[in-house]
Amino acid sequence: MGNGQHARHRGHGREGRPSSSNSDRVVVLPGDEIPSRGLRPGVGTYRTDGRIYASVLGLVRESPPFIKVMPLSGRYIPHAGDVIVGIVTDVQGTFWLLDIAAPRWAPLHMTGTPWKIDFGETGNYLHVGDSVVVAVEQIDETGRIGVTMNGPELGKLEGGTLFTVSPAKIPRVIGRGGSMIQTITEATGCQLRVGQNGRVWADGPPDGIRRVHETLVMIETEGQRRGLTERVERYLTSSAPTGPELPWTGPPRSATLDEALPRPESLDDGPGDDIELSENGA
Amino acid sequence: MGSVGAKEIPQLITPDGRRIDGRLPDELRQLRIVAGPLHRADGSAYVEWGLNKVMAAVYGPREVHPRHLQQNNKAIVQCKYNMAAFSVDERKRPGLDRRSQEISKVIAEAFESVIFVEEFPRTSIDVYIEVLQANAGTRCAGVVAASVALADAGIPMVDLLPSVAVGKVGGKICLDLKKEEDNFGEADLPMALVPQSGRLVLLQMEGHMTRDELSQSLDLGVKGCRSIYEVMRAALREKYSVEPSAATPAAAGVGQ
Image 1 (cartoon, each protein chain N blue to C red):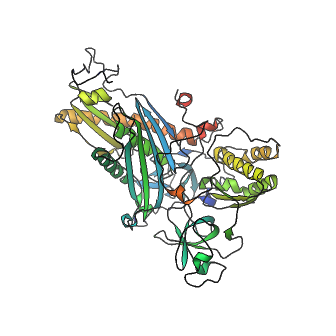
Image 2 (cartoon, each protein chain N blue to C red):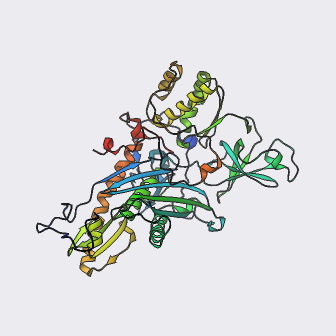
Image 3 (cartoon, rainbow over the protein chains, first blue to last red):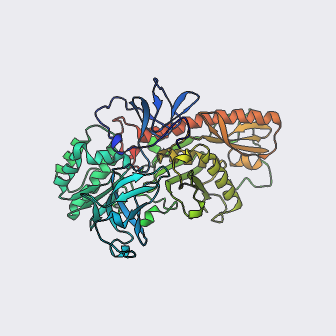
């Protein structure tokens, strides 16, 4: 990294917010040539022989002097300042290791917590499987991630349910200025915490949790289309006991440690799955 | 297929130059690809190619297990190619064997050369290829599926990696062999192409060919890869199209 002529960093999250400019909504695939228009290769692109190509699947954005590709999929790539939801995967003498759905785990040092802890007492505060809201402090070039639990709105999550959505869709879950969170909170009576890493925590009445889940599925499936907010509002305000027809995505995903394990044999899928070739194959 | 015993070698090329399934020598079997059918993986793809059925899932970049495999300057690419016990006529003994280990290795190395592994030091990108039904050319179908799954997982790479096998059947160079052609033909030459650069990152051969036949085969294979490439791209575009025509939620799929 950083040694080639193409300084390439990947990133999405807040930058990925499909903001006002809906004009250039061109999906590119890895290997697609992008007309450079004199711009330099940025995030999600690479340059060979003076031409610029996309390296990830995403939308082309021009932000002079760079041209970049905002990914539409993929794991969460941490940025300093992000608020994320981590799950404790290991307890050590002075720190906990958090699975933050990023390429690497992040250590949460005991000095980064509001508690006064002696060496070896970390296990009295957080256990494997606990969920915490933390902020990314810094990332170094080797990919090491420093997180802290000191700050407003940060801390351990008690109770509730964790959902996972694609990190690329988190800007849609938040909405402009948090409008979508507010809409969902008001309509379902659930408290929401949204992490930039794609984890959404909700707590409230069981029916509210169900509606939060359905709303998240809706955002994830239809987040690319316009008029999302209106559709979500219409759904949430309709008193229909069951939601719109949505593809079954399995039970609510409370992320646990074993989710990180490969399970290639679990080819099971609910009804309404998308492998119906006869429909699309024509 | 059981009827095609070892007793007699079937006539692989008809007098009018067609193959046993009626294809011309440079014709591909029907290929259909679905991007993102699995929700638990970071990326996935399902491929039906002739009578082959292959599912691929991609996880990562993620922490490396076991730790000592971790590389400080780049991500490692791990691949597991596996054939289901029910994927062939006679039950296949499940699990790793020499063949699947070799295929896993060459596929992992092919992908390592197109993925920007330096972007994710100390991590692992895991590719799982499950062959559900086999009819020759499963490693190529596996590469195609895995490549679409990698793009679906948002992993940065030089290009998608179309792949196809060319073979010599009844003295003729043919594209995309099916099982009988593979079993009774003279040679088999699977390859994977990087369309952006025209580089071949996977090339194996079994059987015998003359030099001329080899170069003829390579040309034919590259041509085949280019048309497979288009099908792969169409599958990804279908999942990620931003047009309102994504009225069928099934087509959009819930990523991960």
